[in-house]
Image (cartoon, rainbow, N blue to C red; front, side, top):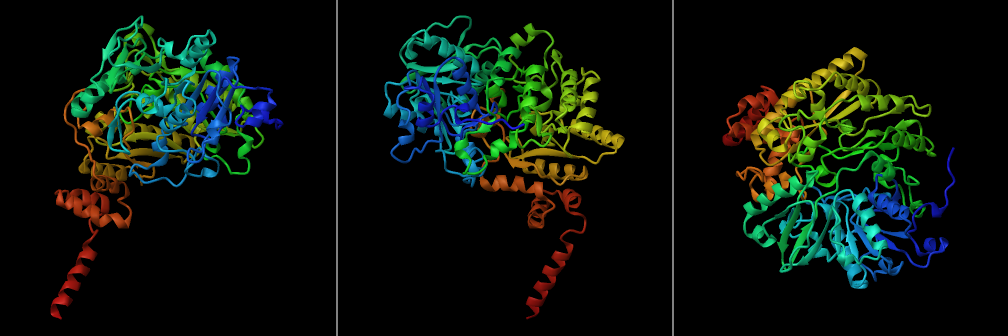
Length: 630
């Protein structure tokens, strides 16, 4: 039965809604680059509901106009405690531009998918406006954009090395990663009357001090001093070397503090919090979300990002894959924070009560679908670990990869009387399901895979081998492609056993650091042999705080400091990307010429067939003879 909602069920986004609550002043105002969707998959809603749960008055300014008289920024007046600023669920530059730096024509986080409702570098733009309007009110920045730009970072879109976002934004405090734990501690201290400029000991936060000042004491850890921003500008190898420390300390459970000098400041980055407990995860997901966009948007059209996830359930956070091109572990951490079955089943109940629910849950998943409740067998070993991945170059012997909790939970959701089908729409780590790679796995991986294939695939299962070249895969921190062959064989066998005809949809990347044209030609030939015409492909996009981006900019691998090849020019990238589309006529002559120039006629035959081009060559020859006779 549909629930009747009042506008006060949402957090206020207008002055009128604040007055309807009888409030004169807000304690906290959140400024966001996204439209306001009151759902646990949207960070602004999570942060707003946490602030509300702490007894504070909070309002949201979603997608304010930064190009007029700034009335949107002024509508609530001064908050009593601070402004919170986020670009939204995505880095604003990734949101705005393709891998080729072309402007996107839509924005999935805006009603109607309309573009141009947030600025480039939104966190910086919003924060500077607030500092100009309200210079005495603290600004706290967070979210993906702030989190991944907290130290010197390469910005692909301006093609330059930028300092910590704290300098450009002029913010007072940066919260990195998933912000629930540091936010609650910040609110606790502010309630006690501690001034913002004296709050320097909260884990998972970053702030500035004058360059010549002594860093305040921080108990329980050492301090790592990175090469300064100025040195990184002069020396690309120093920048690359910095990243190893940043990545390791971001993923350690007992991490050290990091300090980097830039301009007239030192950037202090306190170590992260310990992974959220099940109770803390439940507390965050069980807040009173309406699970709906704010009614203000009703006439402006659907919000595409919401439409994609409104019937989905997020079971956990974090990813221990450590892929070189991915920012998930940099923001959410490598250790898995899982919700309880009870909390997940409560959310299933809420989804089934939604007005337009037809019986289908679109996703039971997380960053990687099959990592729910996976963790170390001996916690003290995990506490000391500095590896960025638990499954590369091999699966850690201390990792318990028992998939039974996932399988049992899927079955419980399946039995829900209002659920016709619950799909696993998130990508699956196929390497965890192959015993030749996951050598310590028990039989639960076979049970899990059969459960998924038989009950939770909509006809197409997404997996991400990303490449076929072992050298490229090593840089990507992905397993050898031979393990994907084994996974496909297993997938096909289960389909045959169950009388199904489901498809495997592999994801691949071109122009990744370490990848050369010949690697892409081999990828095309090998995937063709497997029966694939690839759909889910993309060109590598350098985003802040990944190993691959560091290599892209510096030319050095941050862990070995050895030079690594990178395709950088548009022509180099196009020459790699076209091999994905060997089956399209418009690319075939270019592919043939490229391969023949490299002495790879064997690949021409494999990809295009033995007779390809002969008829065309005969026609060209005949045409030339006719012209010569004239």
